[in-house]
Every structure is written in structure tokens, then in C-alpha cells.
Image (cartoon, rainbow, N blue to C red; front, side):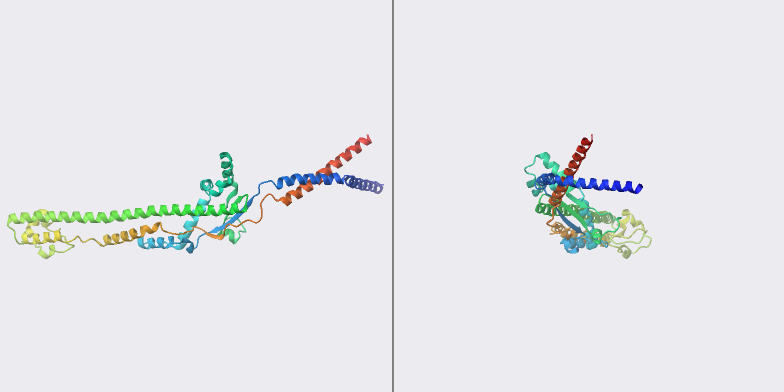
Length: 380
């Protein structure tokens, strides 16, 4: 009995399935017409919707050849100031890190898009509100820096060394041109900021060297002035006292040659002569000779004075070259902004295909629903 019952159920299913196919076949013109209508509607959207094309670029740290005249200028500065830690690699990485940092700045993106000639031409028919909305949308959705998570597994070699940038626009030419301009804009901004910071440190070092040099000059000039004044006073006293020659009396047995030691100064710290009051005891002849030497001999500066002066002169000579660095890139193109050949959206073929299938499916559902509704009405 069970087998007979199962057979009847199967026969009923087969009859229902055949009946379903027959019903749909009878209404095939309606189904085709519905699919055609859906396709027409979809085509209207697909062929009128705004297109989107995306240009892509991949950048990496600049090579030494990308650093232009900046490299020899910074290298010479390092040699002058004795910076042993300077290297081409450090300069390259420093520029590239700043380049990546400023690429992510929304404010810098906004500044670029606001002043870009290409964007101005594209939005010239828009209202101010529409233009602002476009710029904000472009900042968040169109002008994208694709950061790579270093902790991510299965990173490609390109992901490890390169940074991908994309810009999407309604035409492939606009997408490529804006991306090129943006990269150049950020590069120029980075170099400008870097040069400002470097020149600030450069000028601070120049000021420090000038101050050191001036301090040494003033200190030795004052020392010479004091020496001349003391010798002049002692000479006047010696003349009034009638002391013509040096006398050893009450001078701890010091001899004249001992007073002539040192860098043009009197080394008399171990006697009463250390006090300027007793200098007249040297005698008129010796004091006059010392005074003539003090007045007519140029100041002898210490070694650090001349090294400071030499460093100052070299840095002053280098200063005009700081701004004349020529073409410098803070990045290197692994792949320059391409001209997109594949449209992102709308995908016309996909839209038409989906619309066609949707038309068939919905019209079939409606037809079957009406068929079973009519059957139920007839059974009643």
C-alpha cells in the first residue's frame, strides 16, 4: 500500500511540474515582454548613469638619483658640521616618511582639490554647495591612499615596499591627470616644509657660531684693554717713583724672563706683582716694552676661534645653495598613474543581464501565482 501511495504522489508531482511548464510556455510572450521591459529600464540607467574610472599609482622610497641637488647640499652640510650619522639612505627614508604622512592629510587633500584647475573646470557648472559636497566625497571615496597593515599575512613584495594611490573620476583622462597633479602637489609641499625646517636649524647654527666668535673676540679684546690699562697705570707710577729698571727686592726672587712666559700675558700669580698695584716694581723700561707690545701686537686667538670662523665661512658660502635644489622627488614610481582602460561602473553588461533575468523571474512568479489562484477559485 505504501508503494502505491508513493507512486501516486510522484505522479501528482510530475503532473504539477508538467502543468507548470505548460503554463509558463503559454505565457512565454508575456515573460519575454517583461524581460524586455526590465532590460529597457536597466539600459536607460546603464547608459545615462555617471561613469567611474580609477587611475592607480604605486610609489616607494626615492633613489639617490631622485634626490637631485638636495643630496650634495645636505652631504656638504654634514661634512662641515661633522655629522657622521648622515647617509643617503637616511635622507631618502626621511623624505619618504614625510611624503606618506602628508598623503594621508585630509586638509592637504582639501587644499589640493580646492585649487586644482582640473577640479575647478569639472565643477564650474555646480553650485557652491554641490562643489563642496563633491570635494568632501572625493576626499573620502575618490582620492584614496591604500595603507598596508604590516601585521597582515601573505603580503606581496609589492605591498611590503610600495604604497598604492588611486583617484576615481568620470573620465579616464581626468582620473589620471588629477592623480599625477596630487602626487606632484604633495611632493612640492613636502620639499617646501622640509627645506623650511632645515633652514631654521641652519640659521640657528649660524647664529650660534657668530655668537661664539663674537664672544671670543670681545673676551680677548676686554682682556687686552685691561692689560693695557694696568700696564699704563704701573708705568706712570714707576715714572713718578723713579724706578727705571726691574728690582728683585720684595718680589720673591723672581727674574724678568719669568714675566715673559705665557701668551703675551704676565704670569706673576705667585708674587706681589699679581696685584696690579705692584706692577710698577717691574721698572719703567720693562713696563714700556710690555705696553708697546700690548698696544701694537694683534690679539692671538685660540684654536677654537679659527675653527669656528672657518665653519662659519663655509656655511655662509653654502647658504645660497639651500634653495637651488632643482628637481627633487620624495618618492619613486614603481608604477606611475595609469590611464584606466576598464570602467569601474556602471557595468552595462552586468546590469542588462541582471535586469533581463529579473524580468523573466518576476514575470514567471506572477504568472504562476495567478495560475494557482485561478485553480483554487475553480475548485471552490
